Length: 399
Ligand code: 3MF
Ligand code: MG
Ligand code: MG
Image 1 (cartoon, rainbow, N blue to C red):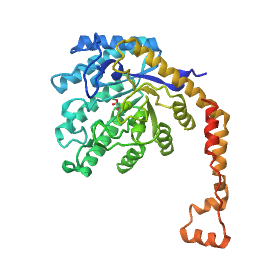
Image 2 (cartoon, protein in one colour):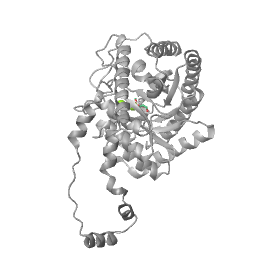
Image 3 (cartoon, rainbow, N blue to C red):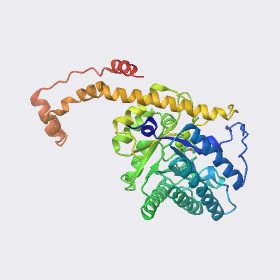
Image 4 (cartoon, rainbow, N blue to C red):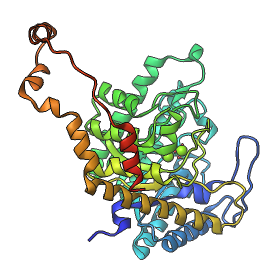
């Protein structure tokens, strides 16, 4: 049968492990890595270390942004050529090690040119730069056999409405995404385009706030059949939801794609991207994924970084091992809970009244007819128990 890593489709995120220097808003770099610095030689050293870590961990997949892997050029063309050189270098390593690419993406947020957004920028030259960048990253993803392409908007949002034209910016974002979808078909990319929702940061008001907001956006531009979502635990928490809520909602809307696995504490007001270690929470997330049929092209990407006090690079390995253990246990527990069937049976019983033909007919009826029926039949519904505490205790049996 399938192995645990095939079900979970673990991926390591290049950016947090190899490009992040350990800064926070109050202080800069704490890490000292031999591959930090400019130039192609260091970018290749970084790739050597990265693929060594993927092999040590036995993760089947990795994910990257252009800016994590290639030296920044003086011009767009130079950056693109650098990306192509590094992608060739990756290609050889992927072939040699069997590591695959879960998704590629473009960093349209770190450079200062993106300080007012990428696709939604008031400056058309930034829109152009962003479009060209996404094209080059889609080409790189295709070249490496990537299974998906992710778009996290970065600074697609605003700081003050006083200088912002909301309607215009949404049109720009809609056209941008349509062009991405068109290009995918033009080059014959078979993977799925995924949007990653996130509220609150980097911009105060983010256009891709949560799954519901992204779905509304996709519908507005007729893209709900073309684009799915990559859901991150920390982003769900920042939006005031739970991880499992966002997954279940996306699945019910037919747009569930993949997950960025990490941990944000409920106390936090910003995205901390910690490694997951909250078993019950991870279990409920996998339960929703399994209920929806499991991963198809998506997977479990560790969008997580070690704390900036973790100066020992060995912590990078141990953090991933702990995260994978948490996920494996939680996944087994979720599978056992689904196989047990009690929850699904109780859920079905709760809605059983709707199985009656006259109840179903009501949904294609109208208010007048229903009101007449209510008066004629003299129905007077009694409240029924939702069994919440009993269900929560039942869940604990599997954790
Ligand atoms: C930001 C994120 C991003 C996205 C990445 C892929 C830097 O909070 O989670 O990681 O995952 O840009 O789109
Ligand atoms: Mg993420
Ligand atoms: Mg994050």
